[in-house]
Length: 429
Image (cartoon, rainbow, N blue to C red):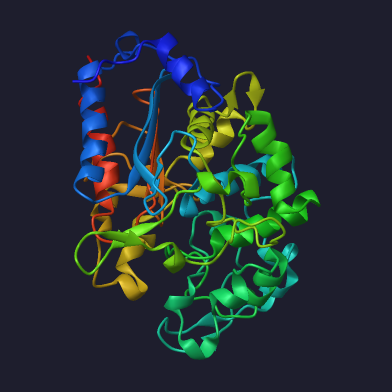
């Protein structure tokens, strides 16, 4: 069994890897966690690599605002023999959505919009966006009620993704989210395509956060990447989070892997959705999936939310705003919360761990009462990313946790289950 690092040794190890330490480290016993259970967490992550289910993983956990573990195992690039490191960079994909909501709510607090404002107030083309009479058809009708900002935030906007539409409607990533486009160009085109459902009718996963990112540009008068840098990344010391990866840091980017024909992992990076090249000079800043960064970057964002909108003396949001973001906004008629029950994934539904979750403002929230498929605390909120990244914030137990891999294929749940099973065995009475 590996010896648990003391807080001082943890600090030295983090500085040695070049990771900026902005959370005070702690002996897990001092914050109510079992060191043996954190050893179990390390073994669970290592097993994912040793059994060829992941090429590499990084995970980080804080309890009571103090860092108790930040570790890496495996490789970020098997072909070049590059080990996974705690400062490796990952495509966050859908974990970007939480960041976009934070940006939206900064503008909300500054009085730039109301939640019930029609989207067309800021993007006039959405006033005429039609709605499909049948999601699988092409015949349309007018909006029964106007599409609002609240619909976008609660994912009841009726916006889906290209594979949800009849091909004749020409809803493609190449015309909406693609390197070389601006989000203005992509969203303006999207406004000419029909919605899948009437606004407010039901929850559905799609382009909602990308439209929200464009609205941040309109409200703030700043490019979306610049707004995030100035209002979130710099204030919180998020050194590596962003839409581009500098050439000098490209070697830190983890490759994406998937099962090959023989069952072993093969490099699948060319197969990931090309919504962002992460190269300097591109202009598509996807609010739904375009960010990259480190585990420590995201842990700081999660800790800020757990703290009610502030971190290290820097306030990003009001406590009441965070509470609004992280409570369930869906009615029973608007559910269920499960993207993989729709579209091309209808026959391959691995997201049963979302049973018992509702939806806040662009974030999954643990609903009160009922059955839950995974362990968690009261008031917990979470989300994941396409290439197998995950995080959660547990206010009841004062825990924030992040686990990042880059993987496409079956067994997506394995990473989150390894994280949760170990940690919820670690909480001491």
